[in-house]
Image (cartoon, rainbow, N blue to C red; front, side):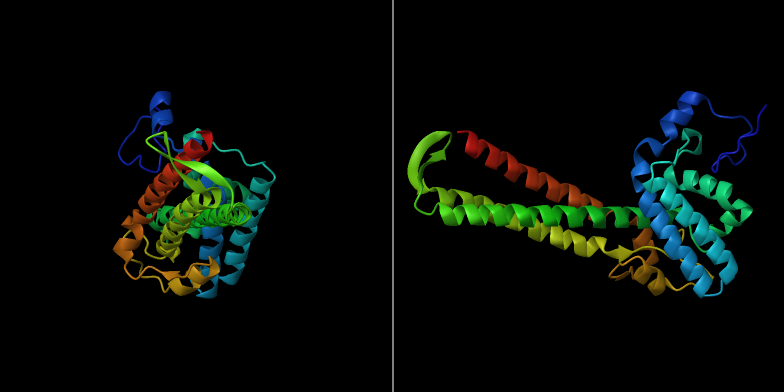
Length: 261
Protein backbone atom coordinates (compact mmCIF):
# COMPACT_ATOMS: atom_id res chain seq x y z
CA UNK A 1 0.00 0.00 0.00
CA UNK A 2 1.45 3.46 -0.90
CA UNK A 3 2.62 5.46 2.12
CA UNK A 4 0.74 8.59 3.14
CA UNK A 5 3.09 11.53 2.45
CA UNK A 6 0.76 14.32 3.59
CA UNK A 7 2.08 16.87 6.05
CA UNK A 8 -0.63 15.71 8.46
CA UNK A 9 -0.11 12.03 7.57
CA UNK A 10 1.33 11.00 10.91
CA UNK A 11 0.62 7.34 11.56
CA UNK A 12 -1.69 6.90 8.57
CA UNK A 13 -0.30 4.28 6.21
CA UNK A 14 -2.68 4.44 3.23
CA UNK A 15 -3.30 7.27 0.83
CA UNK A 16 -6.50 9.28 0.83
CA UNK A 17 -9.21 8.82 -1.77
CA UNK A 18 -9.52 11.46 -4.48
CA UNK A 19 -12.82 12.84 -3.18
CA UNK A 20 -11.34 13.32 0.29
CA UNK A 21 -8.35 15.10 -1.21
CA UNK A 22 -10.60 17.44 -3.18
CA UNK A 23 -12.79 18.09 -0.16
CA UNK A 24 -9.86 18.97 2.07
CA UNK A 25 -7.86 21.05 -0.40
CA UNK A 26 -8.06 24.86 -0.30
CA UNK A 27 -5.84 25.69 -3.28
CA UNK A 28 -8.94 26.38 -5.42
CA UNK A 29 -9.41 29.65 -3.52
CA UNK A 30 -6.28 30.34 -1.47
CA UNK A 31 -4.22 30.56 -4.68
CA UNK A 32 -5.22 34.23 -4.37
CA UNK A 33 -2.70 34.43 -1.51
CA UNK A 34 0.21 33.33 -3.74
CA UNK A 35 1.79 36.78 -4.10
CA UNK A 36 1.46 37.48 -0.39
CA UNK A 37 2.84 34.09 0.59
CA UNK A 38 5.93 34.84 -1.49
CA UNK A 39 6.22 38.35 -0.03
CA UNK A 40 6.10 36.96 3.50
CA UNK A 41 8.70 34.31 2.68
CA UNK A 42 11.03 36.88 1.08
CA UNK A 43 10.91 39.06 4.19
CA UNK A 44 11.36 36.05 6.47
CA UNK A 45 14.42 34.67 4.70
CA UNK A 46 15.99 38.13 4.50
CA UNK A 47 15.57 38.41 8.26
CA UNK A 48 17.06 34.92 8.74
CA UNK A 49 20.12 35.97 6.75
CA UNK A 50 20.59 39.31 8.48
CA UNK A 51 20.33 37.77 11.96
CA UNK A 52 22.80 34.99 11.09
CA UNK A 53 20.28 32.19 11.60
CA UNK A 54 21.00 31.20 8.01
CA UNK A 55 24.21 32.02 6.20
CA UNK A 56 23.99 34.94 3.79
CA UNK A 57 24.72 32.53 0.94
CA UNK A 58 21.82 30.27 1.93
CA UNK A 59 19.50 33.22 2.34
CA UNK A 60 20.44 34.62 -1.07
CA UNK A 61 19.85 31.28 -2.78
CA UNK A 62 16.41 30.98 -1.22
CA UNK A 63 15.61 34.58 -2.12
CA UNK A 64 16.64 33.93 -5.73
CA UNK A 65 14.30 30.94 -5.85
CA UNK A 66 11.41 32.93 -4.37
CA UNK A 67 12.00 35.80 -6.79
CA UNK A 68 11.94 33.32 -9.67
CA UNK A 69 8.58 32.00 -8.42
CA UNK A 70 7.27 35.55 -8.14
CA UNK A 71 8.25 36.22 -11.76
CA UNK A 72 6.56 32.98 -12.83
CA UNK A 73 3.44 34.00 -10.91
CA UNK A 74 3.31 37.42 -12.56
CA UNK A 75 3.73 35.76 -15.95
CA UNK A 76 0.89 33.34 -15.22
CA UNK A 77 3.23 30.37 -15.39
CA UNK A 78 2.78 28.89 -11.92
CA UNK A 79 0.65 25.76 -11.80
CA UNK A 80 -0.74 24.51 -8.50
CA UNK A 81 -1.53 20.90 -7.65
CA UNK A 82 -4.57 19.93 -5.59
CA UNK A 83 -2.49 17.07 -4.16
CA UNK A 84 -0.47 19.72 -2.30
CA UNK A 85 -3.69 20.96 -0.70
CA UNK A 86 -3.00 24.63 -0.03
CA UNK A 87 -0.94 27.58 -1.24
CA UNK A 88 1.77 27.08 1.40
CA UNK A 89 2.54 23.47 0.50
CA UNK A 90 2.31 24.25 -3.20
CA UNK A 91 4.88 27.01 -2.81
CA UNK A 92 7.16 24.75 -0.78
CA UNK A 93 7.05 22.09 -3.50
CA UNK A 94 7.63 24.64 -6.27
CA UNK A 95 10.55 26.22 -4.39
CA UNK A 96 12.10 22.78 -3.81
CA UNK A 97 11.89 22.16 -7.55
CA UNK A 98 13.76 25.44 -8.10
CA UNK A 99 16.57 25.19 -5.54
CA UNK A 100 16.48 21.67 -4.06
CA UNK A 101 16.49 20.63 -0.38
CA UNK A 102 17.73 24.05 0.74
CA UNK A 103 14.09 25.18 0.37
CA UNK A 104 13.30 23.39 3.63
CA UNK A 105 15.39 25.91 5.58
CA UNK A 106 12.90 28.63 4.68
CA UNK A 107 10.70 27.32 7.50
CA UNK A 108 13.36 27.88 10.14
CA UNK A 109 11.79 29.87 13.01
CA UNK A 110 8.42 29.96 11.28
CA UNK A 111 5.16 28.01 11.61
CA UNK A 112 2.27 27.56 9.24
CA UNK A 113 0.27 29.47 11.87
CA UNK A 114 2.13 32.77 11.62
CA UNK A 115 2.68 32.18 7.89
CA UNK A 116 -1.02 32.05 6.98
CA UNK A 117 -1.83 34.88 9.39
CA UNK A 118 0.80 37.04 7.67
CA UNK A 119 -0.64 36.18 4.27
CA UNK A 120 -4.10 37.26 5.36
CA UNK A 121 -2.88 40.55 6.82
CA UNK A 122 -0.98 41.35 3.63
CA UNK A 123 -3.91 40.40 1.41
CA UNK A 124 -6.51 42.37 3.35
CA UNK A 125 -4.24 45.38 3.76
CA UNK A 126 -3.96 45.60 -0.03
CA UNK A 127 -7.71 45.16 -0.50
CA UNK A 128 -8.44 47.87 2.07
CA UNK A 129 -6.21 50.25 0.14
CA UNK A 130 -8.25 49.61 -3.01
CA UNK A 131 -11.57 50.05 -1.19
CA UNK A 132 -10.49 53.30 0.46
CA UNK A 133 -9.22 54.70 -2.85
CA UNK A 134 -12.49 53.88 -4.63
CA UNK A 135 -14.61 55.33 -1.84
CA UNK A 136 -12.56 58.54 -1.90
CA UNK A 137 -13.08 58.78 -5.67
CA UNK A 138 -16.81 58.10 -5.32
CA UNK A 139 -17.24 60.80 -2.70
CA UNK A 140 -15.26 63.26 -4.80
CA UNK A 141 -17.66 62.67 -7.70
CA UNK A 142 -20.72 63.02 -5.44
CA UNK A 143 -19.39 66.28 -4.00
CA UNK A 144 -18.69 67.75 -7.45
CA UNK A 145 -22.15 66.73 -8.65
CA UNK A 146 -23.82 68.16 -5.56
CA UNK A 147 -22.11 71.53 -6.05
CA UNK A 148 -23.66 71.72 -9.54
CA UNK A 149 -27.18 70.89 -8.37
CA UNK A 150 -27.79 72.99 -5.27
CA UNK A 151 -30.74 74.66 -7.02
CA UNK A 152 -32.04 71.52 -8.72
CA UNK A 153 -35.32 70.49 -7.12
CA UNK A 154 -36.49 66.89 -6.88
CA UNK A 155 -39.18 65.05 -4.93
CA UNK A 156 -38.09 63.50 -1.68
CA UNK A 157 -39.45 60.04 -0.94
CA UNK A 158 -40.64 58.28 2.15
CA UNK A 159 -41.99 54.72 2.05
CA UNK A 160 -41.65 54.89 -1.77
CA UNK A 161 -44.12 57.80 -1.88
CA UNK A 162 -43.54 61.38 -3.01
CA UNK A 163 -42.96 63.59 0.02
CA UNK A 164 -41.32 66.99 0.52
CA UNK A 165 -39.43 68.66 -2.32
CA UNK A 166 -35.67 68.72 -1.74
CA UNK A 167 -32.52 69.86 -3.47
CA UNK A 168 -30.83 67.19 -5.58
CA UNK A 169 -27.59 68.29 -3.89
CA UNK A 170 -29.15 67.51 -0.51
CA UNK A 171 -30.09 64.05 -1.77
CA UNK A 172 -26.55 63.42 -3.02
CA UNK A 173 -24.92 64.64 0.18
CA UNK A 174 -26.88 62.09 2.19
CA UNK A 175 -24.95 59.38 0.35
CA UNK A 176 -21.73 61.36 0.63
CA UNK A 177 -22.14 61.18 4.40
CA UNK A 178 -22.95 57.46 4.32
CA UNK A 179 -19.89 56.66 2.22
CA UNK A 180 -17.75 58.92 4.39
CA UNK A 181 -18.71 56.83 7.43
CA UNK A 182 -17.88 53.72 5.42
CA UNK A 183 -14.44 55.17 4.70
CA UNK A 184 -13.88 55.89 8.37
CA UNK A 185 -14.84 52.32 9.29
CA UNK A 186 -12.48 50.85 6.71
CA UNK A 187 -9.69 53.19 7.84
CA UNK A 188 -10.14 51.94 11.42
CA UNK A 189 -10.17 48.38 10.04
CA UNK A 190 -6.82 49.12 8.36
CA UNK A 191 -5.33 50.05 11.73
CA UNK A 192 -6.09 46.52 13.01
CA UNK A 193 -4.91 44.91 9.78
CA UNK A 194 -1.59 46.75 9.58
CA UNK A 195 0.10 44.45 12.12
CA UNK A 196 2.70 41.74 11.54
CA UNK A 197 2.13 38.26 13.02
CA UNK A 198 5.39 36.95 11.55
CA UNK A 199 7.66 35.59 14.26
CA UNK A 200 4.88 34.42 16.55
CA UNK A 201 5.53 30.91 15.16
CA UNK A 202 2.99 28.26 16.22
CA UNK A 203 1.78 30.21 19.27
CA UNK A 204 4.61 31.16 21.64
CA UNK A 205 7.44 32.42 19.46
CA UNK A 206 10.73 30.65 18.86
CA UNK A 207 14.08 30.14 20.56
CA UNK A 208 15.89 31.32 17.42
CA UNK A 209 17.21 34.90 17.75
CA UNK A 210 14.80 36.38 15.18
CA UNK A 211 14.11 40.08 14.62
CA UNK A 212 10.34 40.55 14.46
CA UNK A 213 10.64 44.28 13.98
CA UNK A 214 12.85 43.77 10.93
CA UNK A 215 10.34 41.33 9.40
CA UNK A 216 7.54 43.80 10.08
CA UNK A 217 9.45 46.67 8.50
CA UNK A 218 10.38 44.64 5.42
CA UNK A 219 6.70 43.87 4.85
CA UNK A 220 5.63 47.48 5.36
CA UNK A 221 3.54 46.83 8.47
CA UNK A 222 3.05 49.52 11.10
CA UNK A 223 4.36 47.22 13.84
CA UNK A 224 4.45 43.58 15.02
CA UNK A 225 1.77 42.17 17.30
CA UNK A 226 2.62 42.63 20.97
CA UNK A 227 1.34 39.17 21.93
CA UNK A 228 2.16 35.95 20.06
CA UNK A 229 -1.06 34.13 20.98
CA UNK A 230 -3.10 37.05 19.71
CA UNK A 231 -0.98 37.22 16.57
CA UNK A 232 -1.83 33.72 15.35
CA UNK A 233 -5.44 33.58 16.59
CA UNK A 234 -6.69 37.04 15.62
CA UNK A 235 -9.27 37.05 12.83
CA UNK A 236 -11.12 40.13 14.13
CA UNK A 237 -9.72 42.27 11.32
CA UNK A 238 -11.33 39.93 8.75
CA UNK A 239 -14.70 40.01 10.53
CA UNK A 240 -14.46 43.81 10.70
CA UNK A 241 -13.92 43.94 6.95
CA UNK A 242 -16.91 41.67 6.28
CA UNK A 243 -19.10 43.77 8.57
CA UNK A 244 -17.93 47.02 7.00
CA UNK A 245 -18.45 45.62 3.51
CA UNK A 246 -22.02 44.62 4.42
CA UNK A 247 -22.77 48.13 5.70
CA UNK A 248 -21.26 49.59 2.53
CA UNK A 249 -23.47 47.40 0.37
CA UNK A 250 -26.57 48.61 2.25
CA UNK A 251 -25.59 52.19 1.35
CA UNK A 252 -25.04 51.14 -2.26
CA UNK A 253 -28.47 49.46 -2.42
CA UNK A 254 -30.07 52.55 -0.88
CA UNK A 255 -28.39 54.77 -3.48
CA UNK A 256 -29.46 52.44 -6.29
CA UNK A 257 -33.05 52.43 -5.03
CA UNK A 258 -33.07 56.22 -4.73
CA UNK A 259 -32.03 56.89 -8.32
CA UNK A 260 -34.46 54.29 -9.71
CA UNK A 261 -37.61 55.84 -8.23
